[in-house]
Image (cartoon, rainbow, N blue to C red):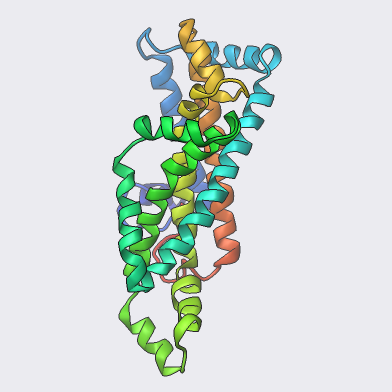
Length: 266
């Protein structure tokens, strides 16, 4: 009865459940998804067909090499967008820097269609073009999210820092940078996921160096839907694994971030 009570707690709001119950609900969710997938319409390939296509992609079309290319490109874009966005967001404490950051944040509405031609003329090679397109697509969203985090810092934190005789850039370091480090990791996780969403499109523009986007477009061109879904599955698994690593890193760097919350960030 006690075990049943713990399982029932999972369908009640704001209840704490144990790790085995979480695993149980995860297995139920996965089983339900697979069952609905198997019973779905003929337009979607069955799980067995997708797994068979995945094996073919791995053994005959160099899936591992293409995956490595895509992963390294996305990691490089994440690093560059973080290096550009975080300082700009932190500089919003300076009134003179806010108009520039505001203009940059509005670029998230412009898209890549027109800017792609400009970036093509400026890039030295295909890899640089793909990198710049990813960075250009991710940075405005990163800056916007982090600037909002900085704006939401409670005034009491600044007042507390001033009572400790902290001022100038020391105050910025303690309150703005260190004080929002856990939120910065959350914004980083969201933009890293956005990078995977944009990656296949960007790799379709420059096909010379390969990548998951090239494989996906080739499979789609030849109406190989099982291969397309296999590649989508690969992106989901790798992206989710990357997200978990970033969440773990956040917990290591900011161990006290979730002490005041009902549950930790997933």
